[in-house]
Structure formats: structure tokens, C-alpha cells
Length: 368
Ligand code: SAM
Ligand code: SF4
Image (cartoon, rainbow, N blue to C red; front, side, top):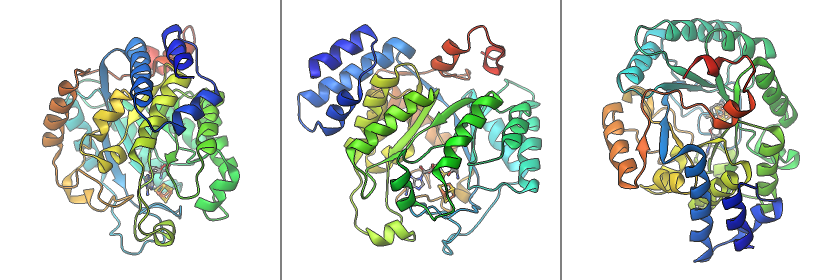
């Protein structure tokens, strides 16, 4: 099996569900190293030894939803709620320009009221109008109506991340209240595509009750959905959530998170894959391991330290005491130590999207 996987990596053929499962089940050397090397070789061929950055701004922890695993869920009364002002968000955008990251991600708890939709639209227009290099903008603001997605696209956002969390409707029900619907979330991925965005999705791995078969199905879902970007990370417990209380000492699985990245690179080939903060939470070099397993995007936090401790999706989230300038310096050192290079001042669009939109009118083609 490992020879077949290595051969596919060489020829550019995508791996099958059976091969994805083999990777997820593998726990021994030397096969593990061979898997990561194969995934890394595909990443190097498709995007080079380059890392693209997005300045991450956690614009608000106010959320109308109650996902059972998430520390900022509406029902968690221990959280001090905040929402950044427009000027604070613009400051983060200016810092992203100054740091030459090229792109920005605006992330928040889910709100879809008219005031919030207007606020985001206006803020996007103002970010786009800033003097200096034009930033690429990714949104991660949850489920919205097709009209809202269209308005935010017209205002300047061109990528959107909406994790489906799991592609299994039965398992989704175990992780969410009854009025949170996987079918609606999947529809949103279609709305986003129709609105013109580069579409990103992903799942958490290593959740209590999750099977490796279900994770293999998730990767197959990413492929069928023809997504451009993937953001995945290991599940990490938060004590003030229903899932955290049901499984209080649950061990997170860093290796499984890395195998998910490798399998996704080998199955989807030319998408952007983020090496997420959850990996760094489980090991100081977790994000570098993610890059070596096939990821090519990192999202350093550019927000003010004041609110960092209030955006705790899970326990022990790193970087809550590290300011944006320190994060930049440490990241640069860590990335060059593994022989990779940050590509500054580019939007770093997904090669998958560039490939499939060739000839079509699309925002990223007018960019860089
Ligand atoms: N509210 C938006 C949404 O849900 O799409 C965007 C922000 S939400 C905090 C971003 C992601 O955080 C979720 O998609 C989920 O996968 C992840 N997340 C939440 N709780 C987590 C936990 N306990 N461990 C790991 N990841 C978690
Ligand atoms: Fe809200 Fe997103 Fe957390 Fe769910 S995952 S509770 S929608 S912030």
C-alpha cells in the first residue's frame, strides 16, 4: 500500500478512500515518515517550499450558536464578550500591511443580524480602501444567507472558510443542538461558491466518538465539494462546554491531525491547507510539523493582546501573551529552521482555484 501511495504522489494521481484510511490507521515507522515525505513532496511540487500568511483578527467572540465543543458558545457564561470597533479592525489591517502578510482573515462567533451584516460590509470596503498594498480578505463568520455572502463578496472579501466539522449527519447531531443543521452548512458551501468566493472547509479530528472511517469520508467530501482551501485541526477540550464536561480528561491527538493533513494533501493535491493553531497548542512545533506534513498556510494573530484570552475556543490556546510583532519574528525563525520560506506581500490564492477558474471572470485573477 505504501508503495502505491508513494507512486501516486510521484505521478500526481490522487489517493483513494482505501489509501486515505491506510494513512489514518498507520502508527508505525518507517511507514509514517514515508507518508509525510510523500505528502510533503506533493506540496513542494504544487506550491513550492513556501508558506503563505494571513493576519488573523478575532473580531468578536459574541456567538448566537451553541456548538457543544466550543469555548465561546452562547451558553458559556464564563466568557467576557467583546466586539472590536471598526477602527480597531482597521488597525489590525494596517498592521497586516506593515508586516507584509498580504492577506487578512476576519473570524468571529456567528451573528447574522442586520447591524452585523452592515458593519462587516462597511468594514470590508474600508479595508479595501486603505492606502498601501491591497490586502486579500478571507472571512470566517459562519452560516449566512446567500444575499449576505454576495454583499460581503461585492464589498471585497474573496475567500471564505466554513468548516463542516464532520460530513456525517449522525455525528453532527451528537456535536450540536437540534437546530444546528449540517444540511444548512453544506448548502452554505454552495452559496459561497455561487457568490464567487474561493471556498474553504474542514473538520476537527480526534473528537470523542469519531471514527477513522468517518474522517476518511470527510476527505472524500472535500474532494466531491471541489473546495479550494482546507482548515483542519485536532479537537481540544474546553472545560465549560457540554463535550468538555462529558469527556473532561480527553486526550487530543496531534499525530492524527498531522495524518489528516498528509492524507488531504495526497487526495486533493493542489488546495491551500492551513497549519492551524490547534496543532501548535498540542506541541510547540506543531505548526511546523503541519507544514512538513503538507500544509502551506499559517494564520498568525494580528489582534490586540487585550482580547486574546477571551477568544478561547479550547484550553491552553497558545499566543495569548505574545504580541503580534513577537509572533512574526518567532514564526519567521521557525519557518526558516525547517527550510521553508515565507512569501510576503502576496494574496497566496489557492492554486486549485487559479487552475479551475482559468478563463473565468474572478476576483483573484485581478489580484496577484
Ligand atoms: N463561528 C464560525 C464558525 O463556527 O464557522 C467561525 C469561528 S469558529 C470559532 C472556528 C472553528 O473553531 C470551528 O469551525 C471549529 O472547528 C473550531 N473549534 C471550536 N471549538 C474547538 C475545539 N474545542 N477544539 C478545536 N477546534 C475548535
Ligand atoms: Fe459559535 Fe463557531 Fe463556536 Fe459554533 S464553533 S459556538 S458557531 S464560534
